[in-house]
Image (spheres, helix red, strand yellow):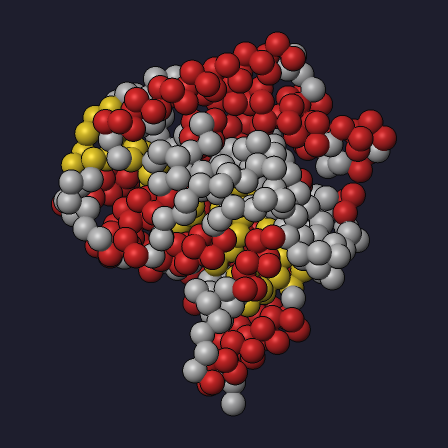
Amino acid sequence: MISGSREHLEQCLARIQRHDATLRGMITTMAASARAEADAADAAALRGDWLGPLHGVTVSLKDVIDTAGVRTTAGAQFFTEHVPTRDAEIVTRLKRAGAVIVGKVNLHEFAYGGTTQNPFFGSCRNPWDPERIPGGSSGGSGAATAAEYATISLGTDTAGSGRVPAALNGLACLRPTTGRISNRGVFPCSPAYDTISPMAYRVADVARAYGALAGYDAEDPVSVDAPVDDPLGPLHAPLAGMRIGLPRRYFFEDVDGDILAGTKAAAFVLEKLGARLVECDIPGAEDAKDYFEKIFHPDAAHVHRERLRNDPGKFGRDTLERLNQMGLGPSAADYAASLRRQEWFTRQLQEVFAGVDAVFSPGCGTVAPRIADSAQTTTTTRRLTRFCYVWSFAKLPVLAVPCGLTGAGMPFGFAIAGPPWQEARLLRIGAAFQRATDWHTRRPALLST
C-alpha cells in the first residue's frame, strides 16, 4: 500500500506525465531517486522519526542547481550533457531536511531573461493560460509549482527571476537578502546579486524551505555570516503596530487596473489585521533599473567571457544579443558609477526603513504576457521586472504574495520588501495575509482536467 510521502509523490509524477507535454516545465524528472526518498520518509514516519522541516515534502529545482549524478544544463546547449559529481550546498541541505527532490525544471537560457522561451529545452508555458509565458528566468519553477508538480520549487533571483514567475503564476516567493542562502554549486548570472528563491502556493511552505536553506557557508565567497531568525516561530504573530510603507511615486504608476485595485485591497487587508499604512518616498527608485543593469549585465558577460569568445554560435539568439549589447556595451566608468549609485541608494533605503518596517507594492505591473507578444526578451523582461530591480539593486529581501485574479482569470500579487536579514518579518506579514484570504488556494483550471 502506498501512503504518505510516496502517495503525494505519485500524484506529482502523474501531473508531470499528464501536463508537461504542454507546459514544458521539466527538463529532467528524477522519479527513481524521488521514490526512494519518499519511501525513506514514510519508513522514518512509521518508526516515529522526523527527518527535518521538509520531511517528505516534494521539491523541484531550477536547472542551474548542481545535482550529483544528474545532469544540470543551465538551460543551455553548452551543458546539455553536463553531469556534476557533487551536489550544490542547498541540495545537501534539502536532503538533510528530508525533502523529496522530484526533478530539474526549465528556465530561460543561463537564467538570463524573463520569458523562459528556451530554444533548447522547449518554450515553457503558464498553467493558468498555456498561451502565456510563465515569466522568468525561473519560469519552470513557477510553472511546476503552479501545476503542482511539487509543493516547493527553488528558483533563483538576481533581478526578479523568482518574484516575476511567482506573480504571474499565483505563488508566494522569497528573495532573501543576498548572501543569506549559499550559492555554491549554482550556475551564476551576476554573482554579487544572485540568490536562491524558494516558491510555493503557501507562505508557510516558503518559510519551511527558507529555514532549511538559510545560513552561512564558508565555501561561498558571497555568503554572509549573519544570525538567522527563526522563520516559523513568528508566522502566527499578529501585525499590530507593524508599519507598512506605501510609496507615493513610481510603484503604483503604469499598473494594470485590476492589479492596481487588487493590490490596494490587499494593503487594506493588512491594515485590518493591525498594520499601520504609512505613505513614504523611495528616493532613486525610478532610475535604479538603469544603474543596476550596468552592473548585472556586464557581470553576466564576464561569466560567459570564454564562451562568447570561443563558441558564440552555441548561445540562443536572444541571449547572445543581450550579452553583446547590454553586457559588453557599458564602459568601466559606467560600471563604477553604478556602484557609487548603489552605495548612495542603499543609504537612502536605510533612512526609509528607519520609518517603516516594510514597503508594499504591486509585484508586477501587468499579468503574464501572451507568448505571441513576448518575442522581444529585453522589452518583456524590463516590463515585468520594473519594480523588482529596485530591491535587487540594494540586495534586500522581498516576499511576493498572491492577492488576486483579473477578470480574465490571471493571477497577480503584491511584493513586501524589508531591511537586510529581516526575512522572518516579511514571512510573518505574508502568512497573516494568507490566513485572512484564500487567493493561495486558487488553482489553474488545467489541474481539474
